[in-house]
Length: 220
Image (cartoon, rainbow, N blue to C red; front, side):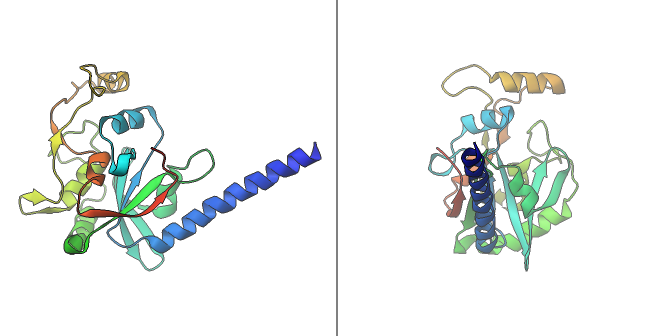
């Protein structure tokens, strides 16, 4: 019995150290302007991920942009609790840990030819801090969901680095909506915006101007 308890304590300690090691490596890798794509675990998250596969077949349901000031790392994002905010890295990462405490995320970096867009993107997010979250996922209504925020942050003139595509809330290869989306929009009292222009984290991660620099805990 004692041996089993000690084994469990050792396993728990190893997992904690492993998680801390990943966090330390992540802090070293991150540069200003990096994108962090997350695989979150929730019913709506699974529905989002099922619609569009991300980079190399990974699934993503959230994305944020890195701002770095020395050792201080903040993530610009749009979340349903607070709208547009700068979130400390540790809080951002804690949302996507698996049952073993390992974060489930991918860090991607703009290729050199696109690096000049980063300062204005950081300024845009800062200027729009506290703008409300967009629960309807409709583009251009002065509210933001995560990938919509980064789409507008990287606008230059009338075009962005990324592309808007017709959104779908239906199961792939069917004409049936995900039950989670039916319940979600019924609670909001809003019709499902099928076919409206939008962008999701998975689609954003496939942009050819982004390259992967660090992956943790993701499964295909």
